[in-house]
Every structure is written in structure tokens, then in C-alpha cells.
Image (cartoon, rainbow over all chains, first blue to last red; front, side):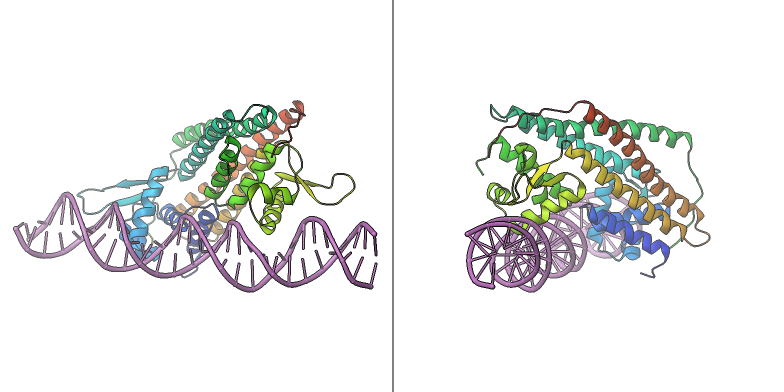
Length: 163
Length: 163
DNA sequence: CAGTGCGTTCATTCCTGATTGAACGGAATC
DNA sequence: GATTCCGTTCAATCAGGAATGAACGCACTG
């Protein structure tokens, strides 16, 4: 809440996610962990972001599902620790891609059921769906390329334990 | 409301838009006009989708802003008519692209203000932003390619006056 | 210059999904 | 086996934006 640049980043990510129809807190959690660069516990998230334990848990798992976070139990286990994956935006892009493809399939299926005599409309709707599908293909290609780059340049291994 | 395949498509588009944090009605309007393939008046939208005049107006203009709809006054003017552009999804993709780029810029700017001694965190955040920026570039490229295709194959000019 | 038809605006209502916080369950510890 | 410490779940609350519809403004018509 001090409105440091870091807090602003975390808030901005919250807004960004919110504007895309996803939970604001998920964006904040991701931002927090990207900044941290190291595993953080649920409790640390709660303290740093001033959110409830339930929200932290729910949203961390949501991010885990999208592949942006990884959950680890460091050594001797006492509590979970959460860590942003090396290239979180890659995971997010893949989520978008998956959604595009799902939408495309759904629309294509519906278009297939259009009544006789609506061939032109059907064609337009199918074109619409195809665009999504082809975009998804294109994005997969892009993601694959970035994924390789990511392995090629392992990134920094330094850590800075703030907060 | 008859739950024909066409109505289902319109409803599905509404849900899709809703799930992406955009007004459900905007998705329905776009779907309706894609199916129609011809200009439709606000009144026709209201009747077909059972929405208020205000919603129809607001959401049609919203879609106009994104470039998915075009407003025309056919011959002698008595009321506006709305028309889905030939490749609406292209406009939508460009909207996404624009958003990516805006986000990237905002994040980069914030990262630039990170305090000394947070170089590693700063680097991670900048990488995050860069990914969005480069993805946006990539999508522009893709959009340009599709735009060309679109001009090359003018699509069907047939119409089918349903609703 | 009153009357009509159209689109926009805006205050209000409504609705949905995010967020909370208490209760629960399970594992580890003593 | 009691206790403590976690993480998860879920019912209740809250917040924010979508949708409405009445009022407004404007342009054309007679």
C-alpha cells in the first residue's frame, strides 16, 4: 500500500486481469510472485497483498491451472510454497490459445446445425470460427518458438529476497 | 428464443463475450449481424434480441469502436443501419493486440521505476512486459497476412434475409 | 413552428461473480 | 491420541458493471 513502484505494478496487474474478466487477486498474486522470484507461502501472500486466506488459496490454484504458477514443498515440508514459472506470460498466452480453439470448435459445431437455406450465413459463421482456429494455430507456433528461446537462455538465477 | 441453432449461436457469442469480460449483449449483436449479413436497424436488433434501445445503441457503438461493425445510412436516410464488417474477427484480434501493447508499455514503465537493488525483479518484470509486446508484434503480422487474404478472396456476396 | 421519429445519455436497478471468513479435514508433531 | 498448523471448501456478503427505460436533443416533415 506504500505506492512504491512495485506496489503499483502489483495493482496494475490486478486491474489488467480484472479488465480481462479474471479475478483481480489472481493478477496481484502473479505479480507478487514474479517480483519475488522465489517461492512464497500462502501466508506471505495474504500479508503482502492483504487478502484472505481463501482468496489466496483459490487464486493461486487458478494460476496453477493455467500453468503460470508452480507449487513446491521445499525441503522438509511444513507448508506449500508458490513460485512463478520462468516464463509466466507464455502460459497465459497458451491459455488464450486454448480458449480461442474451444470457442472456434463450439461455433463451428453450432454453424453445422444451421437450417437449410442459410448457407451464406452458415459460411460467414464458419469463417468467423475458422479465424479463431487459425489464430490459435498461429499462436501455438509462436509459443513454441518462444518456448525454445526460453530454454536457450536460462535467464538469471540471482534472487533478491525482498518484502 | 426458439433455440434454433442460430439462436444458440447468438447466445453462445453472448456467453463468450461475457466470459472475456465484455458485455454479453455486444456479443449477441455481433452474432446477429454476422448471421444477417445485411444491415439491420437498432429496432430490428431490439426486437430480435429482446434488449432495450439503450443497450442496442451503446453496444453497437462499442463494436463500431473496435471495428467489428460499420454504421451506414442506406439511401434516403430515415434510420441508421448496422452491418458486420467482412472479417469481424480480424478487428477483434486487433483489439486484443492493442490491449497487449498497452499493457506491455504500462508494465515496462512501472518496471523502470523499481528501486535500486531490485535489478533481478526488474528484469523479470521487463521480460514479462516484453513478451506481451513481442506477442503483439507477432499478432500484427498475422493480422496483416489475414487482411491480405481477405482482399484476395472477396467472400460470398449472396444474402439471405432471415430473422 | 408544432409534431414525429430516431439515436443518445444517464440515473437507477439488477445481477453475477469476486471476496471473505468461519468451519472443516488431514497431516505432522509432541 | 490430543494438539497445532495448513490448505480447502462453502455459504454469505459485497462490489462493480451491465442492462434498463425514461428523458433529452436533434433533424426532418407537414
